[in-house]
Image (cartoon, rainbow, N blue to C red; front, side, top):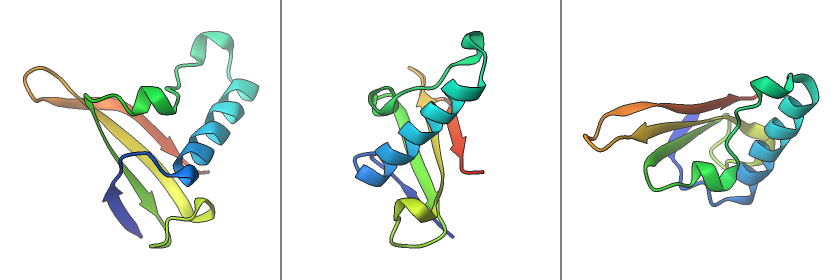
Length: 85
């Protein structure tokens, strides 16, 4: 497995995230839909990384995307974690 800092610009990241959002919309009650879209995850105050089973980072091998929010005091807190089932 490889983990890397990710600017979330790759097409495979957008595809992975959109699939997650579509899956969650299909099975989650309306009040439980809290997913950030790709633009939400690309905010300047988020630090993101992804993990992959294969160094090529093709979408079939992408395992997860994580993001931490950086507050005004440079503290980090969980913003979003998305994992492939």
